[in-house]
Amino acid sequence: DGGITQSPKYLFRKEGQNVTLSCEQNLNHDAMYWYRQDPGQGLRLIYYSQIVNDFQKGDIAEGYSVSREKKESFPLTVTSAQKNPTAFYLCASSKLAGAGTDTQYFGPGTRLTVL
Amino acid sequence: GQNIDQPTEMTATEGAIVQINCTYQTSGFNGLFWYQQHAGEAPTFLSYNVLDGLEEKGRFSSFLSRSKGYSYLLLKELQMKDSASYLCAALDSNYQLIWGAGTKLIIKP
Image 1 (cartoon, chains in turn cyan, green):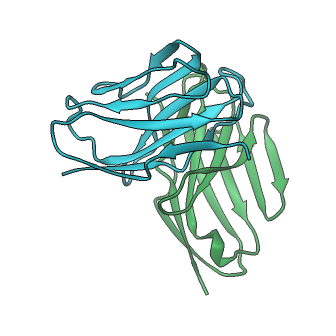
Image 2: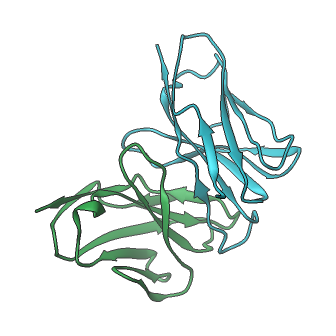
């Protein structure tokens, strides 16, 4: 079945450690996105990528890094520079970036807790 | 600035009808999305409107008025499984989604 997978579902890390969240899609979508969701707030865009080997900062990129070496994969690294990393992280993909009717489809999410 | 407003929480009765409103202010506009999100899960796509009017899809309908910067999601024949958060998101001139904080819908028997 086609879809988006994220792993792990729950992740715990100690303060000061970097951690990488996985996102894979087999939908043949060009665009991929990382969002952060906190209670009582809308989804906030961290990074997005419209094509392999290219990515753009979103609204809250500080303390995060990404790579897009393959069309199917868009991992997110939460670095120790991120001041408040505890959150629910959602990865999404869409067929074409910049298309008006282009719907984003989401993975199941990773809940990161910093101890 | 860009902004999406929707009520924080609503309560409705099983079998009834509920309307969830959303107002938006964005730099340009390329359409409005509604997503459903059950607690602890990913958002799932419900509807997309770019033209004024009502789009009906089974028990769910979505309405858009571009001149008023307003949309609503109408849920009919409510079922317990409809208890979830409903997210409104507008696509701005750069084709970036601007998200509301979501409306938590509580369904009572």
